[in-house]
Length: 96
Image 1: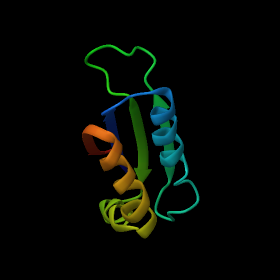
Image 2: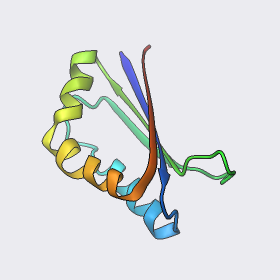
Image 3: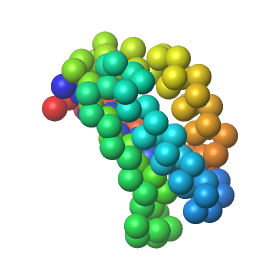
Image 4: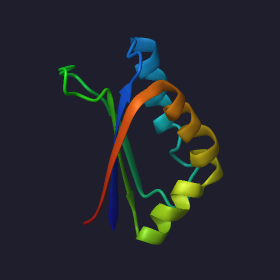
């Protein structure tokens, strides 16, 4: 199994923008067959070093993670929104 974690720092982290990102991430549920686990959370500490939203996803294999990356919903709707609203995005992928 592969875990894919992504952190999003918004350019303008208003409550509305944070909710938009959070809801868009959660909207992937049921749309991408390779996605075995999906959770998204909004940071509650809000420190200077904090990112605003985190995404945790799990896949059966690296091939499934790659298929997710290019899936039309992820690549065509989720990624463009994240790029338009975020000043920084960081990811970690590891086998578990």
